Image (cartoon, rainbow, N blue to C red):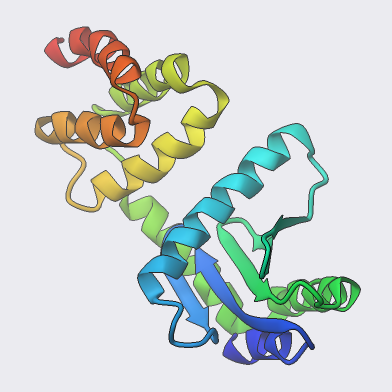
Length: 204
């Protein structure tokens, strides 16, 4: 897989590329050292959210392009939960990069290494699932968050819930989940609304 993103970097104008898993974080990167892993992980999370949100309005969306003064970021979801993104100079050859991404997507389907990443992503997802006794509460919390944040709530909730579950998905830790969601909401008024909606659920 390292070879695959190295081929993207060989395209004129492409500074480097990364492979990001929504479950496993940053998988591969050939960007210069100035691009720190924690920053690339944060970028990968945001790009994955944007691609998912974009698909809500445009089901056939393939690539996401973010244009800045000195660079362009191109992202594509190769398969569920696995995103590749490249950082490029403004003068990069967009058609050549798109063609290379198409080839990469086809090649990864047949590579055992890519299948292993996909399988490990599924395994981690299963290990982070909540028990039957908590599932109704988790579902209700997700519904209540949607009342506060709208359509993006599902994406945000799934990401936070997975992070929370890594330390143990237990009833005793539900207040921690609420606190993590509050930090993601950010707005004091919306936080107050969310807490008022979830209070009866937690008391029950």
